[in-house]
Each structure stands twice: as C-alpha cells, then as structure tokens.
Amino acid sequence: MERINGIVVIGLGYVGLPLAVEFAKHYPVIGYDIKQKRVDELNTGFDSTFEVEENSLKKVLSKEQGNFSTPGLHITS
Image (tube, rainbow, N blue to C red; front, side, top):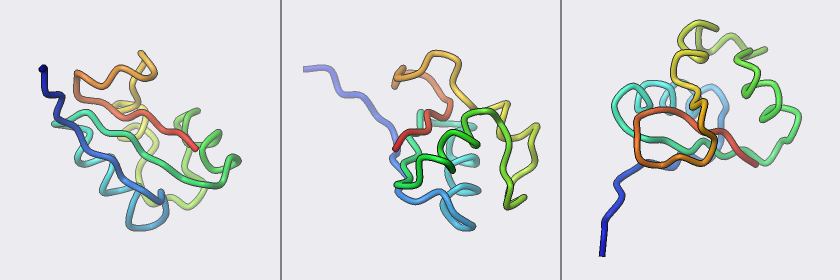
C-alpha cells in the first residue's frame, strides 16, 4: 500500500491560515474551514484578514485541486 504524507489544517483563521501556508511550502496541505465565503475568498488568493501576504498565499495555492502528492495548498469547506 502506498503511503501519502500530508497535513490537514482545520480552521483557516488567524492561526490556521498562516500555519497552513507555511506548511504548504514543504508539504501537501489541505486547509479546511466551515465558512464557504472564507473558502471562496482564499481560493482567489485574497485574505481579507491580512494574516498572510497575497503573494505568499497565491504561491502555495495548488493549481491541481485535490492533488495531494506535491507541496501546495488546497482549500476546501
């Protein structure tokens, strides 16, 4: 059986989002939040709370949504 290593961050607020972005620089990460509006905003690369810089967020957002084998960030609700 193939083992896939990755990280899931639950809650993308002032602690979770910066943590997810930093982890996503080195590991595949799924960020989960229950607020659909927040998820939609983050998936565009914009953080209205300004917890992370826009260029940092955009850099780690995975272009292949659901790909859990390479570093990057997939945000879902």
